[in-house]
Image 1: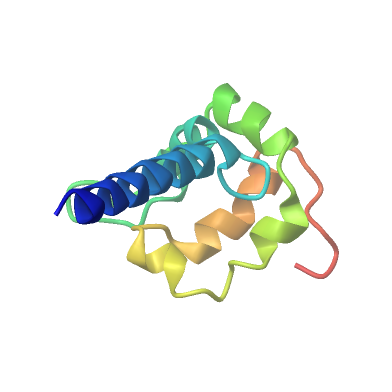
Image 2 (image 1 turned 30 degrees about the vertical axis):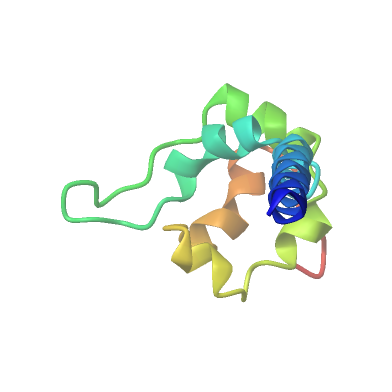
Length: 105
């Protein structure tokens, strides 16, 4: 039984390390914090919030350092809507932050 406990413990620690590392990496060179700053500007409309918010300066600053071509790769992904993100709003975000999106996006 001691061997099984050690194996489970090692697996749990390894998963925790991997999850923590993924938080630091974020998505397409945007940290989790940067993504959170931008979420209100790209959230799908709801009955109590039919219009998106303008991107904050913090969102635009996070977006400046992002890999826009990488982010563009998510425009047709099922991932965005499943996270409550409107893909059209997400694709319009660089222009709202006065950034030039990739030509083929």
